[in-house]
Length: 249
Image (cartoon, rainbow, N blue to C red):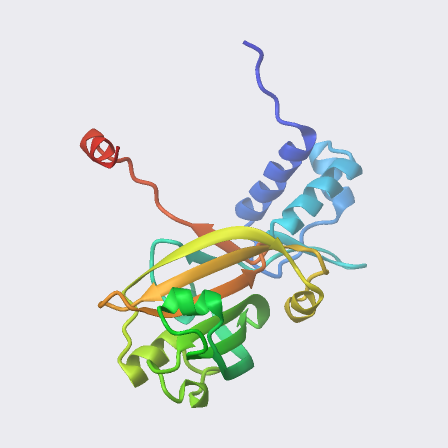
């Protein structure tokens, strides 16, 4: 069997990641000059540049024109198993979330929202649109919809300073108990690009989630876009027993 050999770019990526770990480089630390690394590893400048570009797109490095290449801040980790607010999840990771309120208003249900919430067409819902930043850098645009009857006066709350989940639970007795989430890929519109600091048409995570209370009522429907270079999606896979497989079949 022919031995697999990594492509030059793949080897360069492994060497770069290994260099960061071996030398204990932290976010904001500068890497040696490209010429120095090329000579160190016997790589062409073109191969090294391609690898750095790839790692920059993956959010591991970033470059400053005329200055060099640097280690990027750690990505925000979104664990798909848990039902934590973004603020809670970020705090566990040693990150700080801030929020910019973009829109907060009451509106009438269209067909889709009326169907999701089991309300009459035209029933009032709140629309809450927010830009979420982690350590001061734009990460996600969230647009949430909440039935107005469940949280009267919601738009008057301090939604830039408090978690939406915390407001729903502490001020209105709505406890987020379970939910479902779907993740896909979309591309930044001109408005999204301006707010999130990316180019128009750049790929983004497209996240649609629904959150229910202990009684099974849908209390929030949320659509969001997020920067994949600043967010990592994780979960845990567990092998099911043969009995469970047969039961599901």
